[in-house]
Image (cartoon, rainbow, N blue to C red; front, side, top):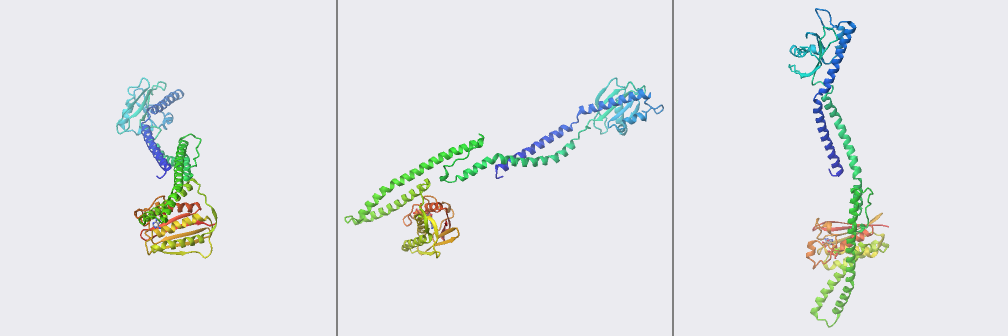
Amino acid sequence: MQTIRARLTFGYSLALLAVLLVFGTALYFELRKPSRQELDERTALDASFAVRYLEESFRVLGRVVSPPPRQELDPGVSAAFEGFQDYMIVVGEKGEVRYLSEHARELEFAALDKLSGLLRPLPEERAIGTVNVGGGHPAFRYLAEPVHGAGPEIGAVLIATPSNRTTFDPRALLRAMFVVAPVILLASVVLGIWLAGTALRPVQGIINEVEAISDGRSLHRRLAVPLSGDEISRLALTLNGMLARLEQSFAGLRRFTADASHELKTPLMVLRAGVERALTHPGTAPDSLEALDETLQQISQMSEMVENLLTLARADEGRAPLAKERCDLRELVAEAVETAGILAEPSGVMVQSLLPDGPVEIEADRHRVRELLLNLVTNAIKYTPGGGEVGVALETSPDAAVITVRDSGIGIAPGDLPHIFERFWRADPARSRTGDRPGTGLGLAITKWIAEAHGGSITVQSRPGRGTMFTVMLPRM
Ligand SMILES: Nc1ncnc2c1ncn2[C@@H]1O[C@H](COP(=O)(O)OP(=O)(O)OP(=O)(O)O)[C@@H](O)[C@H]1O
Ligand SMILES: [Mg+2]
């Protein structure tokens, strides 16, 4: 149930199932109660028919009962009642039975006696009621009616029907429900998926748009606000408000960083010039020289950091244009390898390289690419203990140039890998050794920006204690 759509569909299919169950059960029990009114109407109809038929037959034939000794209802007349589903009894004026319908004939004596007893004495007028005949039979709903116009041999008619017999069969309902319910449920699931999908489509749209605004540089973008005025458009408006505030604070932060680093550049330059002059001044006391030297180192590091900060702040503001030109990447890598050789010498690290034979032409900002390469090789050397190896390789494919910088150094812990491209981030062990591995933690942030600004990418693989490999992909012309 990962999506709201699935949860919604599941939820209301379940609700529908519950409703169907409750509705079906209620209906079943309600309909199982025999409808007394329906029964009474039926018996009344049957009784009127019987009475009218008897009277009419008497008027036409002159008699409806066969002569003594049998004195039963004439077969010609009784044939009309043979199809009766109900229990029918016709009695003479003294209550003697003249006719029993097919069902009535099947009743055992006690029950039949109970029923025909309702006609002794003859009813004065139509009587309706319920009677229990025993013998495991359900209660009977009956109607007794006197017959006046069918001669002296006919006194009254009784129509009775078991009170559980209605035209409606609740079990049929149950069967129908079992067949229909799954179909309804299936239809509701399909409809549900479709409805939830339609309702959530605008949300999906917003998710896609927000995903596209993934970094600080796309904060100027806004979501399209639907005109519907519903929750979705309010959500879009709210998000747009939030984006505006974010954009504002991001811009403020960038401007501050850019301004601050810019303002720091001049005083640092003045400071450096002053210290350099003092260092070269013949009158400076020898014990001050050491302190001044240390100061100069710190100033250089700080200048570098300020420069890096300014670069990043400008890049964020989109004000760090690339002076792209056609250049030979092989030449740039070879240069970086040479510099690396010089840098690595004091610490006893071997630098090896693997370069293609011919030039590798790319469209790039020469200075930035040089900076990228230097950042990577200085890191490789810095984080590799003496006796280790650093390898730089350049490979090409038809549409990309791939630079790998690998070392056999201290490596990076898996938990640290996601952070190394963050600004000012340095792994703890390295940080504790600021003395021999100085740095600000901006190098890789800038490297990543340079690679991406050229339409390329940078990835890293590392194993603690075994070494690290950075792979930079730059698109070719
Ligand atoms: N080749 C490497 N081997 C091991 N750890 C590395 C390597 N390259 C980078 N790191 C880790 O990533 C961190 C960030 O590197 P980054 O280059 O951004 O900063 P830095 O080298 O510490 O400082 P600087 O800003 O001077 O480059 C480093 O502090 C280090 O912990
Ligand atoms: Mg570095």
